[in-house]
Length: 418
Image (cartoon, rainbow, N blue to C red; front, side, top):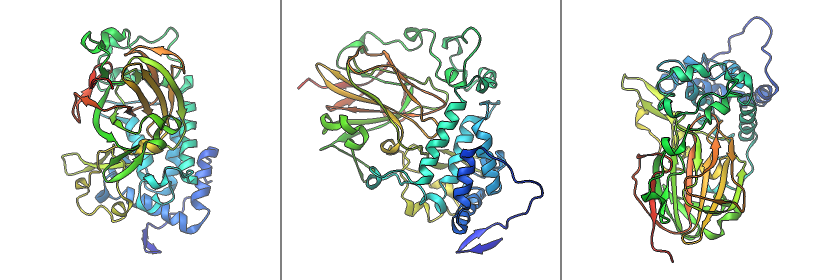
């Protein structure tokens, strides 16, 4: 062990043989990391911290065989063409996502990335942040190939991923064309799997846009939402569509990798905006006690731990440093934007939010189209993501934080029309 610039770095171990050859996207990362000695030290410190059992995440790093910086480059290379597969009791799909970002979440390298805070919402991404976008696109291309389907059978054999198996669509003739096609599969019949009740067809009822867990709601005041003391501009989230959302309500829900990944209209009306906003690929993690004395990784759905806190280190009890659960990363993340206008109750903005590598949002509606409540409007690919609704007028919510809300079931009601 040596110490340089105050950082504790494991000694480099020389290895015989030729250096590994990586795809150009991984070579770009390696060149960026090693261009300056001080920067390479930062990344070596990140690996050291990410594999330190006291910090959480050591078991996940071990499962992916990452002990050195070169191991991390190799992991990034392997992930580019990894055939998604799950085994009994394990969620490799989620673990690989967590490990990729766990290293990039370490305090020694966090300043190399565009921060997630109100002051940075108009900034162009840093080189490292934009590299993550490019890397996610490469993975997305791979997961849209026939070759990516080789492990799909393992999902059918896994109880976690094969819940409600009798309701999912059957494989198409000739098999699935890609892993993304499988992951965004339909129900056999929406009205059987996720019926829209007669009571919820009422015009004043808002239904869930996705199978998801409700994560909370916040008032919109003078075009801003205040979350955990930070004031976030709705104008950045909705961009040109924000003019009609100076007041009202903001709500967030999150999906898990095992959920149905298609979204449906929360109200009836006319589509007045429909587009994909391409931005960052971001994921912050939190530490989770596994109940056996070990600390593992989990998604931090809050994604707003102050850098000053993160740089202090995790101490001896990292499981006590759970991040906040209020959403904020949506302002900086790739997302869909569908604004539906109801003649009686005004506009509702529906935002399917990409999460890390799940940054592919596919829209199925277009401007000028009339849609009915419960109609399919978009889908994600490859894993869990977030849903946001921004409502032009205040509403009364009928669900609580942590509630599982199936798509096409009631989550709120409009008050009397203005």
